[in-house]
Every structure is written in structure tokens, then in C-alpha cells.
Amino acid sequence: MDAKAALDRVTEMERVAAASKRQAEMMADFLDDALARQDTLFVEAAQMGETPSYIASVSLEWIRRQVHLAHTMPLLKKKMDPATGKVRIDEESIEIIRQRPIDWSREAVLAKYLIEREHHKFPPILAVLSEPWVDDPSSEMWDDDGRAKETSTIFHPLDGRGRVGLIDLSSEARLYALDGQHRVIGISAALNLISTGRLDVREKEGQVKRDEMLLLDDLIAEFDLDEAKVQKLGSERMGIEIIPAVIEGESREEAQLRVRTTFTHVNKQAAPLTPGEISQLDEDNGFAIVARRVAVRHSFFKDVKNAVNFKNSTISKRSAHITTLQTLTEMARSYLIADNRYTAWAPKRFELPRRPQESELNSGIEEFTALWDHIVHLPTFHAIASGEPAALHRRFAHEDAKEGKGFGHMLLRPVGQQALAQVVGLLRADGMSLEEIFSKLSELDRRNGFQLDSVANPWWGILYDFNGQRISIRGRETAVKILRHMVAGLPDRDRRELREAIAEARFIGGDEYRDYTDTRVSKSKISLPELI
Image (cartoon, rainbow, N blue to C red; front, top):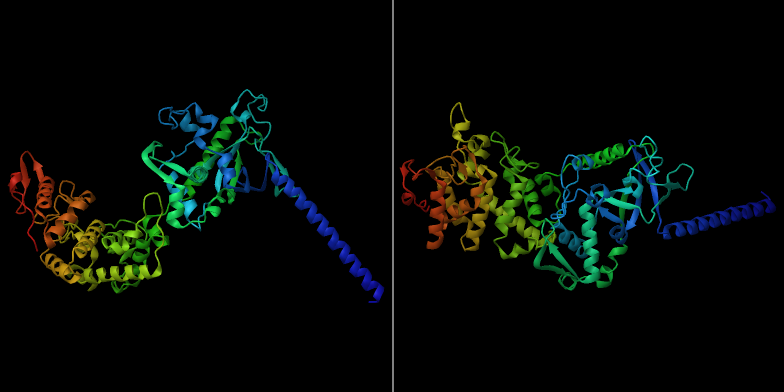
């Protein structure tokens, strides 16, 4: 290539680069102007099924100003109960839209989360965009057959394929959150708290709690927040997906059905996590982290097949599972919380759990592992580790129809395991060692003292519903007091209250109660169980 050709090539490349730069600058200027307008929103178009949607990034302040709650839609306003502020359900309103009621007690929790958590994150909001004519059946925007002449969301494409563009947001247009209403109230509450310095705390139904509020200065001081950074919360951005209230050619009834169906499908497809799945994924709750690590590391859970149910919070009577991850999480909480070192792990009012330091977690794991080291040496657990079926020890006698050998063991039920952990934690806080405690518990186990469906044991009527022949979780706190009494005794006042609770649980009708020998007696004859 000669010098002139090389020079020409360089010149052409510079011309193309300059043209590309001018084009980029023009596009940037155009987009800056478009993004600065209040009556349009820059979006990317999407479509699933027959419903178009438009996805955008907007500021939290924009959401506070622009996005309203679904129950404020004009379509529903006439159905609002002025006393409760909720949609009055009748034949018409239930067919218009099915929207879950707002839990206003979450408002303060979410506001506090946004302000004090550095890595806060909300998923996108799904909203419906409506114009006034949508709610006016006599509007000229409906044809003679009652069908929409145009779509209520006007999209102006900026590319040849209609992938990106602008949607009109007239001064009368309204956005209503179909999915994400609690995110909306949380954002609004956080920004109001920042601007006014205070936020009244509400009950679930929306009533303001007397003398309860969040103060911005208190949050800044407690969590050592950067006030300048807090003030910028409103400029943070998150996603929003917008669907039109009415599509061209739809009747008003068809539009209502489509919007309602969209809401229903979104909520049905987003299946809630089970308690076990929450415990598996939770990286903030220290008790869940401890439970998860012990569940996969402890030799007993590794050696006994299917020992832990990692998904569900209950165990069927014939299951091979020993416990559940959710139960282990509750056990870790009940056991460790009695120690002052772990009280900070429990979230304070209006806040979500905060992940403990790794050194604290290791200490909690060591403590909880020690608890299970002693539990698995109880005679029943030793028998299961040696190959006896857990279901045999769990089932009540009447459930084992063929041989009647079910032992109905309290510690093979989640409620019993939780009560045990709580009692041991309390006794440890009182100064007893694990060796002392489990020496007595082992003796109780050897004499079948944990059998729930035996009238000779104090759990009968407390954790065992003898009328329905089933487990009863309502007696858990009483069971805790009984076990604590049997291991270490209780003060006289607590003894009187406990005796009264046991007697009431053994009431069988008239003036008769069932004592530990299966004899009908008067209430005064019901005594406390003997100490071990």
C-alpha cells in the first residue's frame, strides 16, 4: 500500500469515528431530553402471552410519587369500607380484582431495612397503568360495541424493531401496584422518615400505635450511619414492569379479567418458601446458620440416614426423619438465647436479623453441637443410631395397630425437641452443667418418662390430646415448666401455678380428673410429677 492510500485510509477511519461520535452525542442528547421529561418514561418492551409490558428503571422517589396501591384504583373505590379502609367484598368486587390486604405493620420494618442496611435490595414492582377514560364506560375511547379504540399505554418506539422507546405518562395517568404493594409502602415510609425525622408505627390493620415511632436520629446513632448517604436514598433506582389496564379491542370486562388473571398468576407462580427452605437460605439469622451447619456436620445426622428433613416443618408419624431443619433452628434459638452472649442475635422490634460475626457463629455452633452430643446419648437416640426405626419410637401405641408397640416419644416430635432445648438452655443459665442435666434426662428416658400417650406421665393432656389421640402443640410452655421442675425443681409459687395447669389438662368431665394411675379423682388430688 502506497503512502497516499494509507493516508486516505486513516482519513476515512477518522471520518467514520467522528461520525460515530457525533451520532452517539446526538443520541445521548436525545435520551437526556427524553429522560428529563416528566410525561414520558424510557422503557424496554416485553411480551408474554397476549399482554404487552414495559420494563423501566426508576428512582425510589419516583415510586413514592407515581405508584399507588391497588385498592385505590377508581375501579374499587366505591367498594371501599370507610371504617376499615379495605375493599368491601361482594359479588362485583370479588370479580373485579383479588388483592391481598395490606399488612401495615410491615411498613416500619421495611423502612428501617432500607435505611440501615447497606446491601438492601427489593425485586421489581409489577404495576398497571390506567387512564381516566378506562373507568368511564361512556368515554368516546370505547366504540359502539364497548371495546377500546386504543391501548391505554401509549408506546413510542425508538428503534426499528420496537424494542426500546418511551411510554406516555400524562398528568392524569395512574400506576397501581399489582405485585409489590408492601414494597411501595416501605419505600414511601422510608422516604417520609428521612424527610420528617420520624415515622409512626402502625398495627397490621393500619391503626397508629400509641407512643411508638421510629426516629431518624436514633437510627443514625445506633447503626453509625452516614447521614449524607441516607439522604440520597430517594435517588436509588429499582425495576418496575408496567402493563396496560386496557388493550386495544378489549371490552372493559375482558380488561378486568386479564389484569386480575395476571395478578393471580404472578402470585401463584411465586410459590412461598417452606420454613425449611428459609432456614437453608437465610444468611442473616444466626440461629438458622448454626442449625444448618450442625445439621450437616454432626456425626449423628451424617450416620443416621434421612435424619433431617430439610424442607418441611413437620414429620409424619411413619417418617424416618429424626428432626427438621426448621426445628433445629428453633432449638438453636431456644437454647442459645438463654445465654447473654447470643441475645443480640434475636432481631429487635422493627428490624430484620443481622448476621453475627464468624467468631460468634463458631461459638454458637460449638455450643449447639455440645447439646446434640448429649441428646444423641439418651437411650432412645442411642437405639435409633443402632438401627431401630425412628418411626417406631415416634408413633403412639394406637397408631401401631398390628403390634401396639409405638412409644409416642416426646423427643421424636418437633414440639418436644424445642421444649427440651429451651429447658436445657434455662437450666444451663441457672448454673447446671450438661452432664448433670442429661444424667437426669437419661434416667427419665430409661423409665419411659418421655412417652406422651401414657397417663402415668405428665405430658398426657399437655402435649398429648387424649380425646383426639394426637399431638397438641398448645401445651409447649407448660411442658417446658414441667421438665424444668422434674430436673431442678421450681419455686413454690411456680409450683402452684404448674399444678393447676396439669390438673386442668387432666379434666375428663363433671368434677373428675385423671391422675397418674389412671384413676378418676377430684382436682385437689392431682399432684406435680416427682423430681428425677
